[in-house]
Length: 272
Ligand SMILES: C[S@@+](CC[C@H](N)C(=O)[O-])C[C@H]1O[C@@H](n2cnc3c(N)ncnc32)[C@H](O)[C@@H]1O
Image 1 (tube, rainbow, N blue to C red):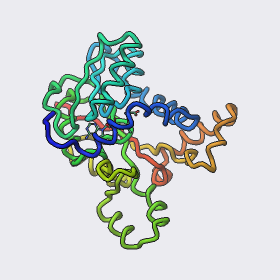
Image 2 (image 1 turned 60 degrees about the horizontal axis):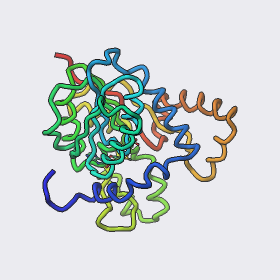
Image 3 (image 1 turned 45 degrees about the horizontal axis):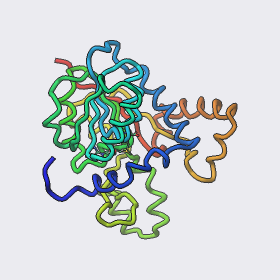
Image 4 (image 1 turned 120 degrees about the vertical axis):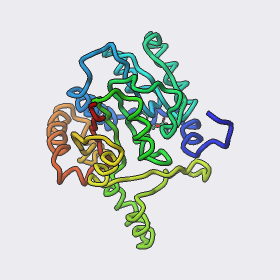
């Protein structure tokens, strides 16, 4: 990466990398991650010999899961501190020999080999945090073999409406609805990176315009257990299983998807 001023998204993630895992260590995120892995399963490649990509890998949560399942994984992140954490965690897991690391912006994946990967995940919205999400998708497509699956999450634009209502400014709401752009709410101005948000229909268009076939759009999560008021609902393990069944059913309901906090898109690169 060049020596220019660090982009805000990199600054922010470099600063929080050390305590990132601790801030996602609670009952909601365990519920969320269990759903994520269940949603991956039907799309995982049968062939373990071809490596896969973890894009915006952060501290390596999904890379480690994929490594444990027998895949070789290339981890990509714009933040050097995040890559450092992922590397350490994978070393501790004893699986470094099947892992590669690239510090790179998803909009410029020049160092990552072309048509070398059979599957990719981009969890926690790294594509929506890229300066040009459409360009990031095209870059990712170049790295995947024809007919490969990319599973990515985006922030749901409709999930942000309440925030703008609370702000109380119709102008801000109108601007947001037009651009879909919001920014990460962190105090430091230099760390306030833009996030591109999408409605389910806009998400489909984004992927299709970049040349993918959209196979599935799920909401994650549709039931907003992440709100302080509802968090306790997941404490009871028996009820948690019942909530999970309901959440999974709603996640695929085209109408219910619109009220989810995030959208999870399964897309396929063209076959030759
Ligand atoms: C919310 S974290 C998610 C981390 C991990 N995927 C997970 O699910 O735990 C988003 C990650 O994407 C990375 N990221 C954001 N924008 C990026 C970009 N343009 N290129 C590469 N990585 C990016 C951040 O540095 C951060 O590590």
